[in-house]
Amino acid sequence: MTQGIDPIAIKQREHKSWTNVAPGWRKHDDFLVKAAGAVNERMIALGGIKAGNRVLDIACGTGEPALAIAKVVGHSGKVVATDFVQEMHDFAKEKAERQGLMNVEFLMVDGEEIDFVDKSFDAVTNRWGLIYMPDPLGAMRRAHRVLKDGARVVVATWSPPPENPWASVALGVLKQYVDMPTPPPGMPGLFSFADEERLKSVFEEAGFKNIVIERVKIYMADHDTGMEYFTYIRELAGPIANFYAQVPDDKKALVDQEIAKKAEEVGGGRAKLQGISLVAVGTK
Image 1: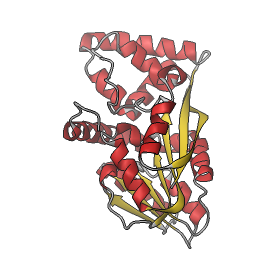
Image 2 (image 1 turned 180 degrees about the vertical axis):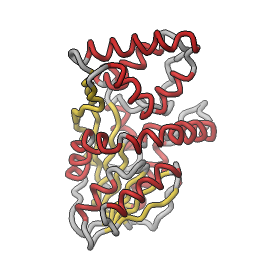
Image 3 (image 1 turned 90 degrees about the vertical axis):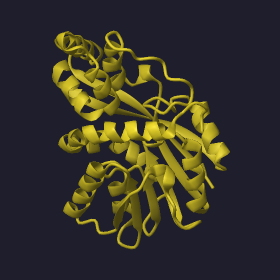
Image 4 (image 1 turned 90 degrees about the horizontal axis):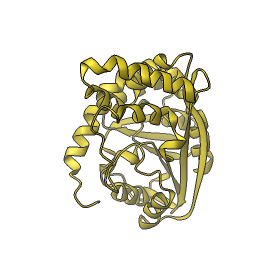
């Protein structure tokens, strides 16, 4: 764990942040599932996930990639999906029931505190969850322990901010109006594993080998206007919503307009903004 990090405070912050935006994840679920589909597909492929497998999905949020994986492993397989935000967990269960997926078990468990039998999973996945954990190395070591010999862990993070305008457009304007200090190295956050070397080193320290990192391009925002984009991203991204809440009330309208204008400039006249997700795989 990085020196100076208060894990309890960070967990409380993240729990509150993602609880606050859980309604947004429910509201925009159809778009998000489609937008991030390419990341799910690469995670499943790189993990070697197939029918009959038993897979652990850590920090599943509203059910992805757990539900996509459940469709691959089929009735003879099983997915155990964990999250620590009740509202996310509940919606994921609702979606599984709606889709008739009976091979998924949802658990309210902190991703850093998984406690399963050694060598009991054929794959472990973690999509955009490791980035918010105060002890990512500890989490990866636990993943290593519960994996069968020769099995794989697959983790998705985000590449650097300039390659992710879906988030950096809003953040770039907000930092002109609120205090947004550069986080110290190792501090959890949206871009905490944007450095591929750091991502690889955590895999190696946890005991994984044959590490490969891919870059997957997706569009995390696709709106006719910049104002629609900013409403969407505030409802979705906990960190952005938190910073916006710090903007003085008499400045909010100006911030809205500046972010909307920037989103349309970057998006080529409409707010279609890309993201680059790093998808890393390692073998036990």
